[in-house]
Image (tube, rainbow, N blue to C red; front, side, top):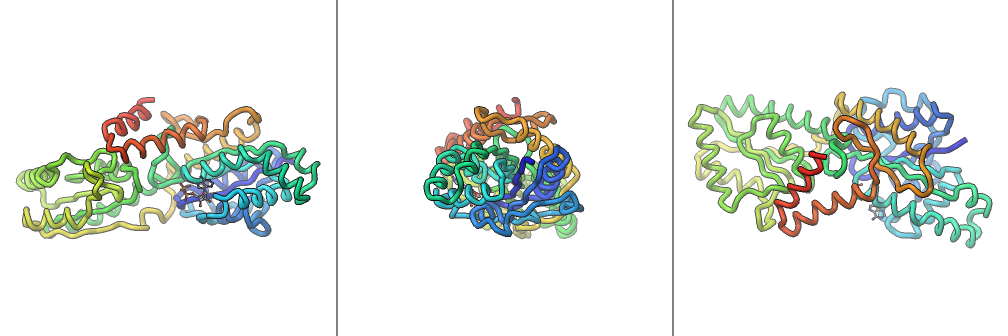
Length: 366
Ligand code: ADP
């Protein structure tokens, strides 16, 4: 029986459990065995109890659960070749030669590297007498399939990552709570949201809550942003708005790449406009809690597709990443998705903001 491993890696996101559940059950439905790799790449490197066979019942009730029940970790050892050789040995000992990884761009990059090195790793292990020649022969190719789990929606070549809509929903709910108290006292709130280098959560929560101003890493505000923000906010106040909401992405910066801090924005609103202003950093509530319906559906459909991709994969085809584009579950080459993601980050680092935006827009247009 074919043995398929499934793991979660990098930052946790709601919906990861739904993805693991779908991979486990689809594997079993297709006559394969499913193995859960616990604690991300740490589980592969350490092996033993961290790689467990999973039954249909083991994942019961996982669809709605937040976080990741098989754990995740940063694993420096897997960045080294020696760590990856240990991982290969542990997989061979368990008879696993296909791996579905739910993680961010770092995790998927590591996975692709592992796949390309696999034949060399096996021949080294045979030479060192760690595995038998027949074992290497029967697991000649490693199949890797990536799924993107991230609250930030920061991966190229997919419209949504698993977890981003749960997180967005949570942020909106929190801003709604703040709205009520802000309006009562006619206060201003500066709200910092997650997203690392990506402004998706900030932009979408700004649109969904009717925020007065939003700061995004991909589109830094004009040089005179202080004046602009104050004039927009005071215009809104004059029109009768009793509250002010300014949303800052955690990766927001000005055109010189200097971070835009919540405290700076608060000082402007308090000192220049005389508004009673508070800062709220939403923090980890944005990651936690149940997966929303969209993430349950996305993780299930993608988990099913991931197992199909494993079973259909050929040694010559590039490792796929399971995406959703225009509401269709599709496969895209994993390396291309990671390269496009890195390219956007590079454009921002080089202050080529218009090109970065064009690249993100082009993706949506595709
Ligand atoms: P994310 O997957 O969310 O981007 P990280 O970048 O922290 O998160 O990656 C998670 C783990 O993936 C790392 O701790 C490491 O074990 C592995 N990894 C990341 N990048 C590489 C790489 N270039 N080569 C090998 N392993 C990597």
